[in-house]
Image 1 (spheres, one colour):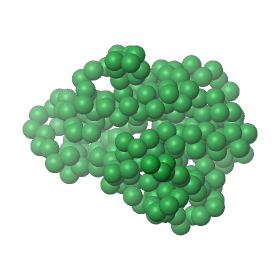
Image 2 (cartoon, one colour):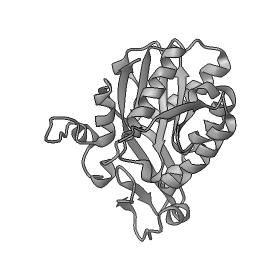
Image 3 (cartoon, rainbow, N blue to C red):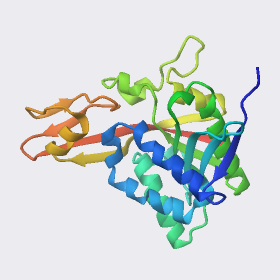
Image 4 (cartoon, one colour):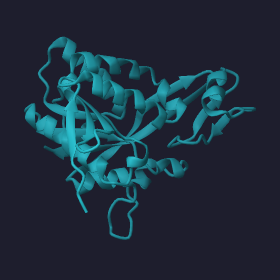
Amino acid sequence: MKVAQYKVITAKENREIVAKADALVYREWPEFMLHDPVADLFSDCYRDLPEFQFALVDSDSNETVAIGNSIPLSYHGEIHELPEEGWDWALTKGIDDYKRGNKPTLLCALQIVVFGNNRGKGISSKAVTAMKKIGQMSGLHDLIAPVRPSQKSDYPLIAIDRYIKWQNDNKEPFDSWLRVHTKLGGKIIRPCVKAMRIDGTIEQWTEWTALSFKESGKYIVQGALVPIDVDLTANRAVYIEPNVWMHHRT
């Protein structure tokens, strides 16, 4: 059986291909996940840091099978002291570092998305490896990632610090995304329990989830890693997503 080969194409090399891949991302996420206000900075990554945004393309079919986004950071703290704000912090800081001309010290993953029926083929590992290579070629020898655990949404009532200790029968991380990273040499550092904050009105959350919120309290929402907090008096619902900091040497 022929082993599939993949090309890494950065937005600096071909902006059109990566832009088409970016347009596919929205159908892969739960609707509410598209409303983190910090994500508005993503367009800056494509404009100012195109060499760190890439598509993974099947060499034979020319099908785009995945997308990867990352951002260089100027970080001088200890790896085990990475902040609880995770993804929101990384994107905000990375854009600020670029605008200030701060010299980057490491690369931070923002997302890797494998499209549709391409999942389960080991493509996620190829994408992580490609991201590490991009960091290495840029002289950035550490890759950090606020990883969104794939199966955590099936267990929204389990605390993230307990969930990341779960293992499969092979004594590997139970969660498939954490397992991909560890098999490639990544180390779990600690949870970043405030990685993303999504705040909206009751009407907005009803639109995003197709749920009815008849009283204040915690609600389990499909695709959310933890319950959302609903306050009818304030007409607000808030979702604060926990992720997991992981670290690779490139």
